[in-house]
Image 1 (tube, rainbow, N blue to C red):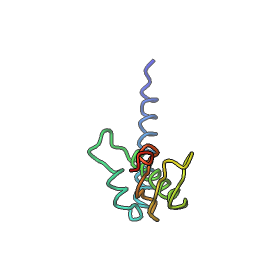
Image 2 (image 1 turned 60 degrees about the vertical axis):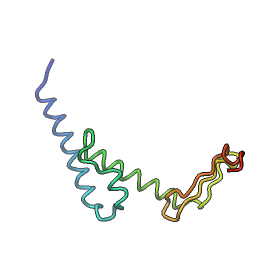
Image 3 (image 1 turned 120 degrees about the vertical axis):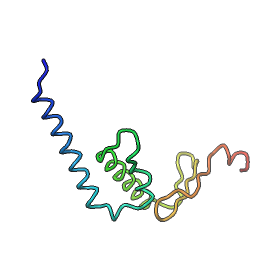
Image 4 (image 1 turned 90 degrees about the vertical axis):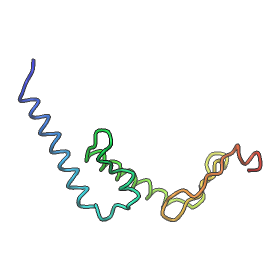
Length: 104
């Protein structure tokens, strides 16, 4: 059975979550690197949402932090691939096993 009250509660809950995400983004806006803003904030994208944008910014922040806290060269299983990173956590290069095998 259809319930207008339930629909209004869902709408109100959704709007509150969006407003909370907007407030959190506004608080940290100046600390968000331009590259992350370009990657995450897309008003013209499919179903733009402050919640999606906040999540993207948080994931980008966490990935950058993890990359910054790890060595600049990361050997993986059997030392391949080898990933070299900059101090800011961005990837410089990846040496894949197949390419090393052929002297590349």
